[in-house]
Image (tube, rainbow, N blue to C red):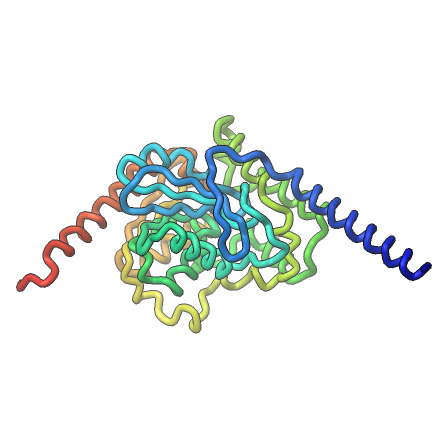
Length: 321
């Protein structure tokens, strides 16, 4: 009887601890608006879909959400099928205990395209979304019509001072919830988002996105989920020859962003075929929110040119030169 009582007491303590942990996680998630949900790879993801036409899928960076692309919706939905979503552990999507590698995120992205019935799409990515899309490109190249790297991770550049501490921390044990929340709060003052921080309209969005970033990302016990595939250099097994990329690529960076993003885009422009490179003055990492008019113009002009070429090729297939 005592053994049974002890077992039941232990079960109660474990259940209470789990409930407390779940409650602690839940309080950092905000209510969702204008979102739909789908379960892929065992994780419930939130997404937003507007307009119609050729799909353009927007992939946000680490610590952000679909809100990063709110100032693109009106411009893109007029001509394209606009799709943005919260990656696992971000925004309103579920946050598993582990499974946050670029490959896991790329597989989620592939599952989304299957759910939507998308065979090919344009992709616009920011920050760590660059590492995600490169894995997606490696595994599903036929689904990629073009890529726009918007101040995104391109692991051709050396790690900058801004990211060096994070790389060192990954070599140690997973941090506690308290430490993770402290680091998350610090992300609101990142050295490469000073422009967004200086403006009321963009600061509100930045802080809300960071507040919705699940602590489970940082507390992930599978430390190998982060590392070389994020920060490079790309290994030869996964990417034997990046010069063979045939998809058109647009590289956009903010003039005032971190040197890691600037040098990565410059090197990709030199080494990769079929790339275009632009710098938007007076902006940094959240350039799509800071200067949406110029950002939208650059991306839409790029996509229109590509789609016109695709349409013309399709019309002349089988014709004798």
